[in-house]
Image 1 (cartoon, rainbow, N blue to C red):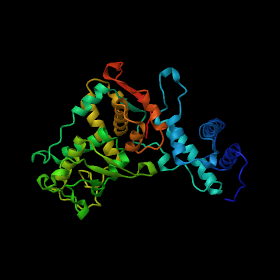
Image 2 (cartoon, helix red, strand yellow):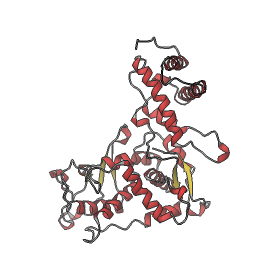
Image 3 (spheres, rainbow, N blue to C red):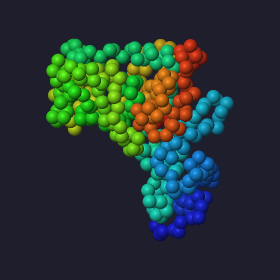
Image 4 (cartoon, rainbow, N blue to C red):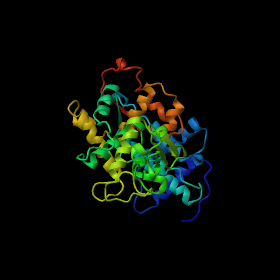
Length: 359
Protein backbone atom coordinates (compact mmCIF):
# COMPACT_ATOMS: atom_id res chain seq x y z
CA UNK A 1 0.00 0.00 0.00
CA UNK A 2 1.48 3.33 -1.05
CA UNK A 3 1.81 6.06 1.53
CA UNK A 4 -0.84 8.78 1.46
CA UNK A 5 -0.26 12.35 2.64
CA UNK A 6 -1.70 13.21 6.06
CA UNK A 7 -5.19 14.71 5.63
CA UNK A 8 -5.67 18.18 7.03
CA UNK A 9 -8.71 17.19 9.13
CA UNK A 10 -10.34 14.29 10.91
CA UNK A 11 -13.00 14.34 8.20
CA UNK A 12 -10.27 13.79 5.63
CA UNK A 13 -9.01 10.77 7.56
CA UNK A 14 -12.42 9.13 7.42
CA UNK A 15 -12.84 9.88 3.71
CA UNK A 16 -9.43 8.36 2.93
CA UNK A 17 -10.30 5.23 4.92
CA UNK A 18 -13.74 4.95 3.28
CA UNK A 19 -12.22 5.27 -0.22
CA UNK A 20 -9.74 2.51 0.60
CA UNK A 21 -12.56 0.26 1.82
CA UNK A 22 -14.65 1.02 -1.30
CA UNK A 23 -11.75 -0.11 -3.51
CA UNK A 24 -11.61 -3.53 -1.87
CA UNK A 25 -13.20 -6.46 -3.70
CA UNK A 26 -14.39 -7.88 -0.41
CA UNK A 27 -15.41 -5.99 2.69
CA UNK A 28 -16.73 -2.93 0.92
CA UNK A 29 -19.18 -0.74 2.79
CA UNK A 30 -22.81 -0.22 1.89
CA UNK A 31 -24.10 3.37 1.86
CA UNK A 32 -25.98 2.65 5.07
CA UNK A 33 -22.89 1.28 6.83
CA UNK A 34 -20.81 4.16 5.51
CA UNK A 35 -23.25 6.69 6.97
CA UNK A 36 -23.29 4.84 10.31
CA UNK A 37 -19.50 4.68 10.51
CA UNK A 38 -19.19 8.33 9.52
CA UNK A 39 -21.56 9.31 12.32
CA UNK A 40 -19.53 7.19 14.74
CA UNK A 41 -16.23 8.79 13.70
CA UNK A 42 -17.74 12.29 13.88
CA UNK A 43 -19.05 11.60 17.38
CA UNK A 44 -15.62 10.38 18.47
CA UNK A 45 -13.72 13.41 17.10
CA UNK A 46 -16.29 15.84 18.54
CA UNK A 47 -15.98 14.12 21.91
CA UNK A 48 -12.21 14.62 21.83
CA UNK A 49 -12.48 18.28 20.91
CA UNK A 50 -15.26 19.06 23.36
CA UNK A 51 -14.10 17.04 26.36
CA UNK A 52 -10.36 16.65 25.90
CA UNK A 53 -9.45 19.62 23.70
CA UNK A 54 -7.40 17.32 21.50
CA UNK A 55 -7.29 16.14 17.92
CA UNK A 56 -7.92 12.58 16.74
CA UNK A 57 -4.21 11.76 16.45
CA UNK A 58 -3.49 12.79 20.07
CA UNK A 59 -5.92 10.31 21.66
CA UNK A 60 -4.74 7.63 24.08
CA UNK A 61 -6.09 4.26 25.09
CA UNK A 62 -7.66 5.85 28.18
CA UNK A 63 -9.49 8.38 26.00
CA UNK A 64 -11.00 5.62 23.86
CA UNK A 65 -12.19 3.70 26.92
CA UNK A 66 -13.67 6.85 28.46
CA UNK A 67 -15.52 7.58 25.22
CA UNK A 68 -16.97 4.07 25.04
CA UNK A 69 -18.16 4.33 28.63
CA UNK A 70 -19.69 7.77 28.03
CA UNK A 71 -21.87 6.63 25.14
CA UNK A 72 -25.59 7.24 25.62
CA UNK A 73 -28.36 5.11 24.09
CA UNK A 74 -30.81 6.51 21.60
CA UNK A 75 -33.77 4.73 23.17
CA UNK A 76 -34.06 6.91 26.27
CA UNK A 77 -37.69 5.87 26.61
CA UNK A 78 -36.58 2.39 27.62
CA UNK A 79 -35.03 3.81 30.75
CA UNK A 80 -31.44 2.92 29.85
CA UNK A 81 -28.69 5.20 31.05
CA UNK A 82 -25.81 3.67 29.10
CA UNK A 83 -25.42 1.56 26.01
CA UNK A 84 -24.70 -2.15 26.17
CA UNK A 85 -21.23 -3.57 25.78
CA UNK A 86 -22.39 -5.01 22.45
CA UNK A 87 -22.69 -1.45 21.13
CA UNK A 88 -19.46 -0.41 22.82
CA UNK A 89 -17.57 -3.21 21.12
CA UNK A 90 -19.02 -2.30 17.73
CA UNK A 91 -17.73 1.26 18.19
CA UNK A 92 -14.41 -0.16 19.33
CA UNK A 93 -14.04 -2.29 16.20
CA UNK A 94 -14.76 0.59 13.83
CA UNK A 95 -12.32 2.94 15.57
CA UNK A 96 -9.71 0.19 15.57
CA UNK A 97 -10.02 -0.25 11.79
CA UNK A 98 -9.68 3.47 11.08
CA UNK A 99 -6.67 3.87 13.37
CA UNK A 100 -5.07 0.75 11.88
CA UNK A 101 -5.40 2.41 8.47
CA UNK A 102 -3.83 5.59 9.85
CA UNK A 103 -1.03 3.57 11.41
CA UNK A 104 -0.18 1.93 8.09
CA UNK A 105 0.19 5.35 6.50
CA UNK A 106 2.22 6.58 9.48
CA UNK A 107 -0.28 9.28 10.40
CA UNK A 108 -0.04 8.10 14.01
CA UNK A 109 2.85 6.48 15.86
CA UNK A 110 0.61 4.12 17.84
CA UNK A 111 -3.04 3.17 17.74
CA UNK A 112 -4.95 4.18 20.89
CA UNK A 113 -7.52 1.46 20.20
CA UNK A 114 -5.67 -1.30 22.02
CA UNK A 115 -6.49 -3.97 24.60
CA UNK A 116 -6.62 -1.39 27.40
CA UNK A 117 -9.37 0.50 25.57
CA UNK A 118 -11.49 -2.56 24.86
CA UNK A 119 -14.62 -3.59 26.68
CA UNK A 120 -13.98 -7.14 27.86
CA UNK A 121 -16.08 -9.89 26.25
CA UNK A 122 -16.75 -11.19 29.77
CA UNK A 123 -18.63 -7.98 30.57
CA UNK A 124 -21.69 -9.44 28.89
CA UNK A 125 -24.32 -6.82 28.11
CA UNK A 126 -24.83 -4.12 30.74
CA UNK A 127 -23.10 -4.46 34.09
CA UNK A 128 -25.27 -4.21 37.19
CA UNK A 129 -25.04 -2.62 40.61
CA UNK A 130 -26.70 -4.35 43.56
CA UNK A 131 -28.39 -2.23 46.18
CA UNK A 132 -27.18 -2.44 49.78
CA UNK A 133 -29.63 -5.09 51.01
CA UNK A 134 -28.89 -7.57 48.22
CA UNK A 135 -25.21 -6.76 48.58
CA UNK A 136 -25.29 -7.64 52.25
CA UNK A 137 -26.96 -10.95 51.43
CA UNK A 138 -24.25 -11.74 48.88
CA UNK A 139 -21.50 -10.98 51.40
CA UNK A 140 -23.10 -12.96 54.21
CA UNK A 141 -23.40 -15.98 51.92
CA UNK A 142 -19.61 -16.23 51.67
CA UNK A 143 -18.49 -18.36 54.65
CA UNK A 144 -16.17 -16.71 57.15
CA UNK A 145 -12.60 -17.89 56.55
CA UNK A 146 -10.99 -20.34 58.94
CA UNK A 147 -7.20 -20.80 58.99
CA UNK A 148 -6.33 -23.57 58.82
CA UNK A 149 -9.53 -24.70 57.05
CA UNK A 150 -11.22 -27.92 58.19
CA UNK A 151 -9.54 -30.95 56.64
CA UNK A 152 -12.80 -32.14 55.11
CA UNK A 153 -13.44 -28.84 53.31
CA UNK A 154 -12.90 -29.18 49.52
CA UNK A 155 -10.02 -27.04 48.30
CA UNK A 156 -12.19 -25.56 45.56
CA UNK A 157 -14.47 -24.05 48.19
CA UNK A 158 -11.56 -22.38 49.98
CA UNK A 159 -10.25 -21.05 46.68
CA UNK A 160 -13.64 -19.69 45.61
CA UNK A 161 -14.22 -17.98 48.96
CA UNK A 162 -10.93 -16.13 48.61
CA UNK A 163 -11.70 -15.08 45.03
CA UNK A 164 -15.20 -13.88 45.91
CA UNK A 165 -13.87 -11.76 48.76
CA UNK A 166 -11.28 -10.19 46.48
CA UNK A 167 -14.04 -9.36 43.99
CA UNK A 168 -16.49 -8.12 46.61
CA UNK A 169 -14.26 -6.45 49.19
CA UNK A 170 -11.32 -5.19 47.11
CA UNK A 171 -12.96 -4.69 43.68
CA UNK A 172 -10.37 -6.68 41.77
CA UNK A 173 -10.91 -7.12 38.03
CA UNK A 174 -10.94 -10.41 36.17
CA UNK A 175 -7.56 -9.65 34.59
CA UNK A 176 -6.02 -8.87 38.00
CA UNK A 177 -7.35 -12.05 39.57
CA UNK A 178 -6.23 -14.23 36.67
CA UNK A 179 -2.70 -12.79 36.64
CA UNK A 180 -1.96 -12.97 40.38
CA UNK A 181 1.11 -14.99 41.34
CA UNK A 182 2.08 -16.22 44.79
CA UNK A 183 4.87 -13.64 44.79
CA UNK A 184 2.27 -10.85 44.50
CA UNK A 185 1.02 -11.70 48.01
CA UNK A 186 2.88 -10.04 50.86
CA UNK A 187 2.42 -11.05 54.52
CA UNK A 188 4.77 -11.74 57.45
CA UNK A 189 3.70 -15.41 57.46
CA UNK A 190 4.33 -15.96 53.77
CA UNK A 191 7.65 -17.37 52.66
CA UNK A 192 7.48 -15.84 49.19
CA UNK A 193 10.60 -13.87 49.97
CA UNK A 194 12.38 -17.25 50.16
CA UNK A 195 10.89 -18.27 46.81
CA UNK A 196 8.11 -20.49 48.18
CA UNK A 197 4.41 -19.97 48.74
CA UNK A 198 4.06 -21.87 51.99
CA UNK A 199 2.83 -20.19 55.15
CA UNK A 200 4.63 -20.30 58.44
CA UNK A 201 2.32 -21.30 61.31
CA UNK A 202 0.57 -18.35 62.89
CA UNK A 203 2.29 -18.90 66.23
CA UNK A 204 5.68 -18.45 64.57
CA UNK A 205 4.84 -14.99 63.23
CA UNK A 206 6.04 -12.06 65.34
CA UNK A 207 3.27 -10.97 67.70
CA UNK A 208 3.43 -7.43 66.34
CA UNK A 209 2.74 -8.76 62.84
CA UNK A 210 0.06 -11.33 63.67
CA UNK A 211 -2.85 -9.08 62.70
CA UNK A 212 -1.17 -7.56 59.66
CA UNK A 213 -3.32 -7.36 56.53
CA UNK A 214 -2.36 -9.20 53.39
CA UNK A 215 -0.88 -6.84 50.81
CA UNK A 216 -1.38 -7.49 47.10
CA UNK A 217 0.89 -6.17 44.36
CA UNK A 218 -1.24 -5.54 41.27
CA UNK A 219 -0.34 -4.49 37.75
CA UNK A 220 -2.02 -3.86 34.41
CA UNK A 221 -1.88 -2.18 31.05
CA UNK A 222 -2.46 1.27 32.55
CA UNK A 223 -0.14 3.00 34.98
CA UNK A 224 -2.89 3.49 37.55
CA UNK A 225 -3.30 -0.28 37.74
CA UNK A 226 0.21 -0.70 39.13
CA UNK A 227 -0.40 -0.50 42.86
CA UNK A 228 -0.16 -2.22 46.24
CA UNK A 229 -3.37 -2.60 48.22
CA UNK A 230 -4.11 -3.76 51.76
CA UNK A 231 -6.90 -6.31 51.98
CA UNK A 232 -9.73 -6.03 54.53
CA UNK A 233 -9.55 -8.43 57.47
CA UNK A 234 -11.83 -11.18 56.12
CA UNK A 235 -10.32 -11.00 52.64
CA UNK A 236 -6.85 -11.27 54.20
CA UNK A 237 -7.90 -14.29 56.23
CA UNK A 238 -9.48 -15.91 53.15
CA UNK A 239 -6.30 -15.51 51.11
CA UNK A 240 -4.16 -16.93 53.94
CA UNK A 241 -6.57 -19.87 54.32
CA UNK A 242 -6.29 -20.54 50.58
CA UNK A 243 -2.49 -20.45 50.73
CA UNK A 244 -2.59 -22.96 53.58
CA UNK A 245 -4.66 -25.34 51.46
CA UNK A 246 -2.76 -24.63 48.26
CA UNK A 247 0.50 -25.71 49.90
CA UNK A 248 -1.00 -29.19 50.42
CA UNK A 249 -1.79 -29.64 46.71
CA UNK A 250 0.63 -31.26 44.25
CA UNK A 251 1.48 -27.90 42.70
CA UNK A 252 4.61 -25.76 42.30
CA UNK A 253 4.89 -23.45 45.31
CA UNK A 254 7.42 -20.91 44.06
CA UNK A 255 6.68 -17.19 43.91
CA UNK A 256 6.22 -17.15 40.14
CA UNK A 257 3.37 -19.66 40.00
CA UNK A 258 -0.35 -18.71 39.77
CA UNK A 259 -2.01 -17.89 43.07
CA UNK A 260 -5.39 -19.25 41.94
CA UNK A 261 -5.41 -22.42 39.87
CA UNK A 262 -8.03 -24.26 37.86
CA UNK A 263 -9.44 -27.64 38.86
CA UNK A 264 -8.57 -29.57 35.70
CA UNK A 265 -5.14 -28.45 34.52
CA UNK A 266 -3.92 -26.59 37.60
CA UNK A 267 -3.26 -23.59 35.36
CA UNK A 268 -4.46 -20.02 35.60
CA UNK A 269 -8.16 -19.43 35.83
CA UNK A 270 -9.65 -18.06 32.62
CA UNK A 271 -11.91 -14.98 32.46
CA UNK A 272 -14.78 -17.31 31.58
CA UNK A 273 -14.17 -19.45 34.66
CA UNK A 274 -14.05 -16.37 36.90
CA UNK A 275 -17.28 -15.08 35.40
CA UNK A 276 -19.06 -18.36 36.04
CA UNK A 277 -17.73 -18.49 39.60
CA UNK A 278 -19.19 -15.05 40.36
CA UNK A 279 -22.41 -15.69 38.46
CA UNK A 280 -23.04 -18.97 40.31
CA UNK A 281 -22.72 -17.18 43.63
CA UNK A 282 -25.07 -14.39 42.59
CA UNK A 283 -27.70 -16.81 41.30
CA UNK A 284 -27.41 -19.08 44.35
CA UNK A 285 -28.14 -16.15 46.67
CA UNK A 286 -30.48 -13.94 44.66
CA UNK A 287 -31.86 -16.37 42.09
CA UNK A 288 -35.09 -17.02 44.03
CA UNK A 289 -35.84 -13.28 44.07
CA UNK A 290 -35.37 -12.34 40.42
CA UNK A 291 -35.94 -13.82 36.95
CA UNK A 292 -32.94 -15.63 35.50
CA UNK A 293 -32.67 -13.09 32.69
CA UNK A 294 -32.02 -10.31 35.20
CA UNK A 295 -29.01 -12.07 36.72
CA UNK A 296 -27.71 -13.87 33.63
CA UNK A 297 -24.91 -11.37 33.07
CA UNK A 298 -24.10 -10.53 36.68
CA UNK A 299 -20.43 -11.39 37.12
CA UNK A 300 -17.10 -10.02 38.38
CA UNK A 301 -17.72 -6.54 36.95
CA UNK A 302 -21.07 -6.40 38.73
CA UNK A 303 -19.36 -7.24 42.01
CA UNK A 304 -16.56 -4.73 41.35
CA UNK A 305 -19.03 -1.93 40.56
CA UNK A 306 -21.16 -2.75 43.59
CA UNK A 307 -18.10 -2.79 45.85
CA UNK A 308 -17.07 0.67 44.66
CA UNK A 309 -20.60 1.98 45.20
CA UNK A 310 -20.42 0.72 48.80
CA UNK A 311 -17.16 2.65 49.22
CA UNK A 312 -18.91 5.74 47.88
CA UNK A 313 -21.86 5.04 50.21
CA UNK A 314 -19.44 5.05 53.13
CA UNK A 315 -18.12 8.48 52.15
CA UNK A 316 -14.59 7.34 51.40
CA UNK A 317 -12.48 10.00 49.64
CA UNK A 318 -12.65 9.74 45.88
CA UNK A 319 -8.88 9.77 45.48
CA UNK A 320 -8.63 6.76 47.82
CA UNK A 321 -11.25 4.83 45.84
CA UNK A 322 -9.52 5.58 42.54
CA UNK A 323 -6.18 4.43 43.95
CA UNK A 324 -7.61 1.21 45.41
CA UNK A 325 -9.51 0.36 42.23
CA UNK A 326 -6.64 1.15 39.88
CA UNK A 327 -8.44 4.02 38.16
CA UNK A 328 -6.83 7.25 37.02
CA UNK A 329 -9.66 9.74 36.52
CA UNK A 330 -12.72 10.60 38.59
CA UNK A 331 -14.81 10.30 35.43
CA UNK A 332 -14.65 6.54 35.91
CA UNK A 333 -16.82 6.94 39.02
CA UNK A 334 -19.42 9.27 37.54
CA UNK A 335 -21.63 6.45 36.26
CA UNK A 336 -21.62 4.82 39.69
CA UNK A 337 -22.61 7.89 41.68
CA UNK A 338 -26.25 7.62 40.64
CA UNK A 339 -26.40 4.37 42.63
CA UNK A 340 -25.02 5.87 45.85
CA UNK A 341 -27.36 5.90 48.85
CA UNK A 342 -26.58 7.74 52.08
CA UNK A 343 -28.17 4.90 54.07
CA UNK A 344 -30.22 1.76 53.60
CA UNK A 345 -33.37 3.73 54.36
CA UNK A 346 -32.89 5.60 51.08
CA UNK A 347 -33.18 2.43 49.00
CA UNK A 348 -36.06 2.84 46.59
CA UNK A 349 -36.83 -0.87 46.42
CA UNK A 350 -35.30 -1.36 42.97
CA UNK A 351 -33.23 -4.51 43.11
CA UNK A 352 -30.47 -3.81 40.63
CA UNK A 353 -29.67 -0.93 38.35
CA UNK A 354 -28.43 -0.96 34.77
CA UNK A 355 -24.98 0.48 34.43
CA UNK A 356 -22.01 0.26 32.14
CA UNK A 357 -18.60 -0.85 33.30
CA UNK A 358 -16.66 1.59 35.44
CA UNK A 359 -13.26 0.08 34.84
